[in-house]
Image 1 (cartoon, rainbow, N blue to C red):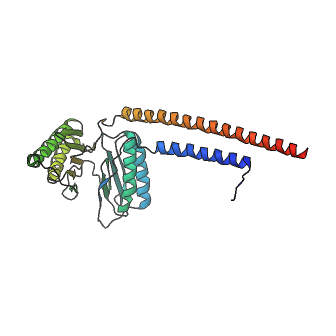
Image 2: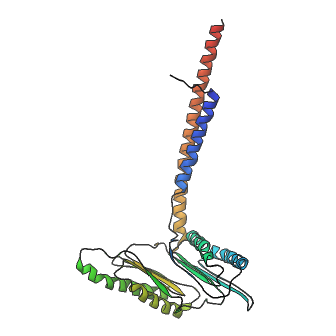
Image 3: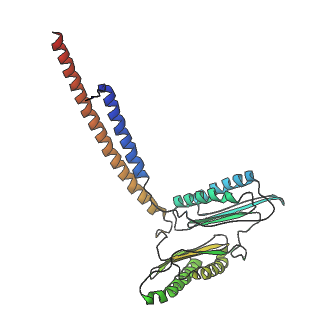
Length: 309
């Protein structure tokens, strides 16, 4: 039988290291919990096919300016127009139900994916929580476009045993899409609704105006309704985004930062409490083990003194 004897000080250090790593792991685990959903799933990425190109340094610099502008808002534009050969326009729009933090997370995700279009002079990306586009002309008031407007249907079909619900599904989707369109036009371009288990969200870009928003959502809604009997559909136009789903995907807070702060504070105090508890255990076990080591050393020294006598 082989026995391994470690020096007491080394044992103490190892114990303290283990407890410290446990503390760090506990903290990292708790902080990894998600407070909300910035909805960064990609719905569509579309790149222009013009022969001209945009210089990558120009793209990087102007997108950096746009990033600063979106820091405190859900909508931002930035443009560079030095000459007829060097023009750059960019627009970012977050959905209004996102908190500012989630808006920034969604924008950051779109900002990392859109450069796949380079060196194309234009590109646009729809995430489920935000939109980002750049081009070589001013498109800010553009609400619909025969070239750009598109849609995306979900993969799953409605699966219910009740034939009446199958027949009623298109009607419910139609009501949800129609209601969210009306409410968004009356509510500065954004609305969410729930019609008998059909959830819908509509978001117009802030720059298209009231009538542009109305026309855009009517066309996007028509495209999304074409996805029935799929459980989910999206209409993605030049100036708006509309989505319906049988699953609730939006936030009730409507971008209310106070709700996000409340959740953050709740998790913050829970984290502090856990860390305080782990720290107490750390120091308790460390002190207890040090006492055991000191007692062992004392007994060892006492035995050695008796042998010497």
